[in-house]
Amino acid sequence: MNHQDKIPLANGKTDPISGGSSVLSWFCASIIAVTAISIAAAHAPPRIRLIGLFSIVFGLMVGWVVVWLASQLQAEPGRRFAVVTAVLLSLCGLIGSTWQSSRLDELRSMQSGKDALAARLIKEFEQQDKQPVSDHQRRSEVTEFQKYLSRRLKNLGNWTTPWPECFWVSELIAAAIAAGWMSYQSISAAVINVPEGSDA
Image 1 (cartoon, rainbow, N blue to C red):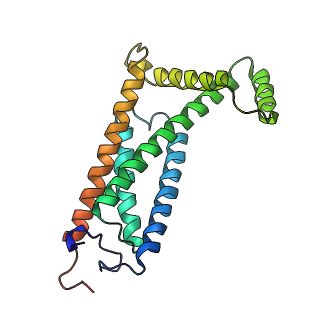
Image 2 (image 1 turned 45 degrees about the horizontal axis):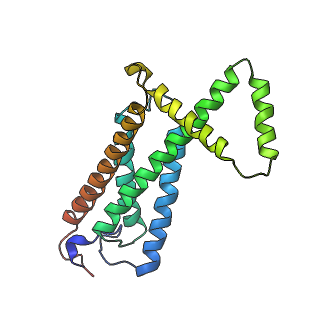
């Protein structure tokens, strides 16, 4: 691997302390960090989760965090692997964050409705039930998620299936592109800023 494909470490060098184990530690830390970002994003106020813009900011944040963690943990995943990791983690993170947001939105609407007590009892009954999830329940969850995607766009008009889903997919693509661009630019900037003669 040539010098241009290496991520400079926090100590200004481009040689990792321990090859494979440092990359594995970086990969696990990246997953944990993106999971934390996704959970925080799901609980963020709706005014922060702006349609279209939020996904790009999410991708930029993931792209930067992935490269920053590689530097801090003295890992050397390689430019391509770091960029691909940032792209995939941004996709998974945004999908998880949107799904969690839909569940929270459903809970809030149930609690504010007249049948809050009945909904709570049904929820407790479902938690006690050890039976595997049926196809009907899965379809119901997917339907609720589709309704959530439609509600997100209510300020932009009355969008019906498949347009809310298509818009969400475009947000995922935007997040992936933003994560890939940010990780690539962060690596390039770090390589340029490595002092001369810093190679071990």
